[in-house]
Image (cartoon, rainbow, N blue to C red; front, side, top):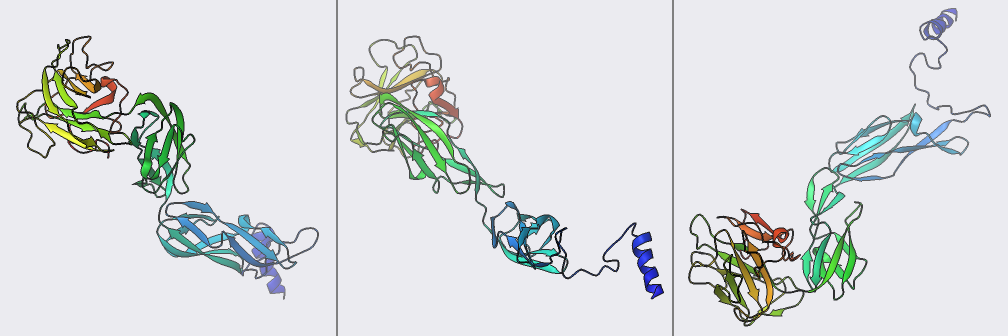
Length: 381
């Protein structure tokens, strides 16, 4: 007995630097959580959430709730040590769980010999942050645009969520928003806020302003030549409107950079029939080898400087539905819309961006020159 007492004194008083309750390292099967009012022992531990379900890449702090011998419960997270079995989750001793692979794992919380567990399930990554393909923009009445939505997922990767996102307008008389990001200008002037939601990500929004202008077909893209031939030229017409447009008898015409008089320099093609919503028509010069909807017989477009008009009627006199001047063009030219687009160069096209049909009546800002030309295809699909 004296020998046992000596061991206790040396182990706790001398080597331990003070009193201790478990010098031999034996776990207490019934941890004591008593206070000055009495004692109680821990009976069980429950982990929350139970079960745990996380998307890939997400972290969540676990909680441990203890049930005691007197029937009471308390949060004992700070006193609990957490662990995990399985490859889908990691967890710190303090209970911070992270989803690292799809699948299931078992989480355990322990104090002494008392423990509790729960199943942790990791599913696919979901949208964490949304990004819109457009900022605030303007539409004519009856004009259609398409809004693309990308998501930064919870695992850090990117995905196009346009087809699954939810779109809503706060002013449907001005603009409506429907599935797959279709935004339609209404029949009244004003502004509407379009809100986009996807999964657990915070909603994002932009403002659409609908002008007093009525939607009409536009010159959507053009090329004035290539390294192969200066006659490898073409003009693409788009109907960006929500309704079909009868274009029978309309004309596509060209004017030289200095042609400020009453006559057009040349007739390129005469249109026929109707353009359905979203229709693209491609009219081309003699050196263009691809599929097209009509061709002129000789090189017409000025390589660097010039202007193209889409008339709602015959050459010279039909009202202009749309026009684009490019390069150095004489002041007062009838095809200038505010300012000309940049001078054209071989193997580049001028596209309406950031979306097809974008038309603020300013050639300088409506058109962007690109090397990845897209005749008879959308510029921003």
